[in-house]
Structures are given as C-alpha cells and as structure tokens.
Amino acid sequence: MLRISGTGASHVGLVRENNEDAGFVGPTCMLVADGVGGGAAGEVAAATAAYVVAATALLQADRDPVTVLHAGVALAQQQLAHGVAMEAGRAGMATTLTALMTDGRSFALAHIGDSRGYVFRNGGLTRVTRDHTYVQDLVEAGSLDEADVPMHPWRNVVMRSVNGSVGERADVRALSLAPGDRVLIASDGVTDLVAEPWIEEILARKQDDAAVESLIAAALGQGGRDNITCVLATVIDGPPVSGDGRLLGALADHTNVVDLAAVRALDSA
Image 1 (tube, helix red, strand yellow):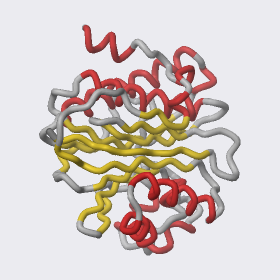
Image 2 (image 1 turned 60 degrees about the vertical axis):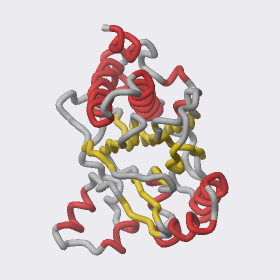
Image 3 (image 1 turned 180 degrees about the vertical axis):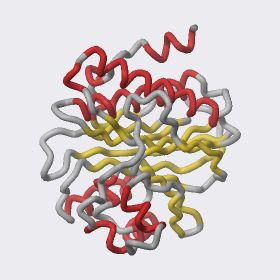
Image 4 (image 1 turned 30 degrees about the vertical axis):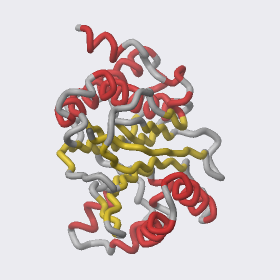
C-alpha cells in the first residue's frame, strides 16, 4: 500500500506579526494553505481550509482521491462563507491551498492560488502546479520574463483562491507517483525567496527533516519577508500506519477553524 512519510515546518518569518500559513502532513494527505485577510482573518481562512480538506481526506481515505479533494475544497469554500456570515470583520478573507492525497493506490493533487507543489525524482525537481497569479498570466502571455517574477510589485496578486465563493473550484488531477518520489509543497514565503535550483540542490543533498530545516533557514536568510511553510514527504510502499498527522502554523490552534464539526457532519449525513 502506498503512503507518504514526511515532515514539515512553519515559521512566522522576520517581518509579519502573525502566521497566516497553515500546513498538515500525515500518512495519506499533505497540504499547505497561505491565508490573507485583515486582523486574524487570514489565519482563520488558512486554518479552516487546511482543516476541512485534511479531515475530509482522513475520513474518506479509502475513496477516490480526486473526488475527495473536490469535495474537500467545496466544503472549505462553504465554511469560509459561513465564517464571514458569523463575523463581518472576516469579509475578504481567503487562502491558497495545495494538497496531495492518496487512497493507497493512486494520488491526486488539488491546487488553487500560488503555493507550489513539486516532485523530486531521480535527482531532478519538477513543479507540478501552476500559479494562479497575475504575473503568471503575464509570463504565459510573453509580457514578463520568469526571472523577473520575484521582483514584480504585483507578484502576490492571486487570481483564484479559497475565498467563500462556492462556485470557485480548485484544479484537481491525478498525479503519478512511485515509491522513492519526494513531494514538496511550500507557501510563497519559501518560493519567492529560494529559487528552484537552490531547492533542488537542498533536496539532492539532504533527507526530508534536514531539507525542511534548510529550506526554512534559506528563506529566513533571504529576508523572511513573509510567513514560511513547507511540507516534504517521501512516497513509500508498506503497511498502513495509524496517526492523524502533524498540524502546522495557524492550524495548530483549533480556535482558528470556523467549525470543527463541519466535516464530521458531512461524513455522517
């Protein structure tokens, strides 16, 4: 049976006062969410989306990952809308979300926003997500060079997100992975500051725990201007293991989650 064995870390960075990133890594699911919003709303958005998708994946671990991730993102959208209805000060809150899930046989990847997913295989790093940003649209239109993206003043303008719009869907697709492959998901607090060749070098030289430490340190060394979160896991073939997983960033405080009962209620409906 295929599963993931991994780790992760989240750091507030050197500029921000609050950590509006959330992360999760467990045997069947890993994800990163990067929230935005006034006050504590970014923390609520990220933690709620991360909780809803991770809990949905855990409760439905034997079902088709593509179907489960679509359902998880849809419920996350509903929960953010509910969170705003409960507290008007949360209006405008939103979050990116990049999540991997396996049912033990196949894998699926859900992505919306500009947190990134990578696969490291045979010494090479491949990005498996597309940034849903204004500058990415410029790059694809030929109006901006990829190398200039980190310096562009509008580099963080996200065109799609988990924002409470029930019609907004994530890109969800099957992802072909094999034992030995390593999957990295990181917020833009990492990828804006640590170039992909540098990420590839770190993964080539270090095992998962040490690599996560090095990625966080590299982002901090480059100024740490945003929250910094990454989860890194290796695909293995072995017996299933118990354990709910590791909670990171805003997700470590359950008071940031709009409704902890929402996923359980859906599963039993």
